[in-house]
Length: 419
Ligand code: HAM
Image 1 (tube, protein in one colour):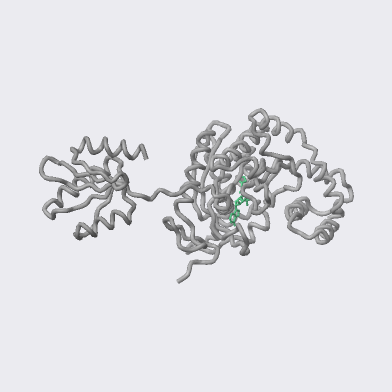
Image 2 (spheres, rainbow, N blue to C red):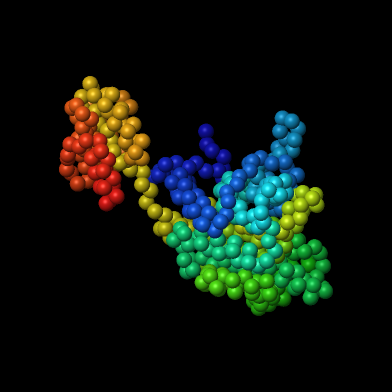
């Protein structure tokens, strides 16, 4: 039976086919995400993958709502798999914020589900690093988040030549609309068109914009000028002081598809423009109030970075490390009477943090040797005579010595460290 389209199998590397994913690659990314987010003082949280349908339809916008996996559970509740983390975070914050000093800096690595059309870089299930700051209105928070986003991408070996963060502002767009009295229609409908402009032929774009009383030429002029709002200028200055200005540019071509954003918004792209957005986010100062029916009113901002595009980008730039799946020590049994010694040695090595393995059944020594080679073992250890002595064979240096347990451990650690 096949897996569902748009879903992934993660297998231990190396994987046999192009459409399979390496578990190690995902694990590598998660550990980088965790390390950098922690270095920025973000605390990890998680929530349920299934939520009340209503939470997820409240203010995300039509596009994401159209992609929901939703159904009625056995208690007749309308539920959906989370397509994004932000509504869950807003719900959790609204219920628990009193326990936490502001600003709250939290991150999470949820698995998300969206019934997407089949396209490059978009699947029906993905993981996302979410980092959000709650309870801070100042631009210092926007800059802090963008710095985190930059440092996460730098931590996996990407440079200012590989990616750029395109910074924009819904306020700037709102001012543009206010200064164009010919504009008609609703702001969010218009934002959705701007969000897709780059993927539309010019005639289609112009026709769509004329429905709002505007023209493509006027929009292009506004985007081309790219004059930063005072808030954006503060973010740019803040990032400049951190030495991170080479990673960002003001670009009003970005507006974000989700409905809840209120202020500065941004997206990260590869510079060559080969891939879909690597990450996206912005300020959503009213969502928590909306989700809590007005009970909690806290400003918030954040971003989501998916694993799909990022792994594709790292693979194409050959920036993924080689996975070390090798074994340190294979414990080999020569004499059946020493089975208990072998198990004792195996257990002790594992207790010391050495990656050790042995055959699960009794097989001939030459077969055990082959197994050691198949597992990529560096050493073969064989219990010897009385007194807990062990014969240690180094398969790289091709030497052999008989050692006590203490000497064995010291020798293993020394040689493993050197390699
Ligand atoms: P989003 O732009 O919908 O934002 O998603 C953020 C990132 O997740 C995208 O840039 C992309 O890397 C990845 N992504 C989204 N959909 C898919 C998909 N179907 N397949 C693979 N990757 C995907 C949000 O989700 C916001 N909730 C982010 C946020 C957090 N805003 C504030 N806080």
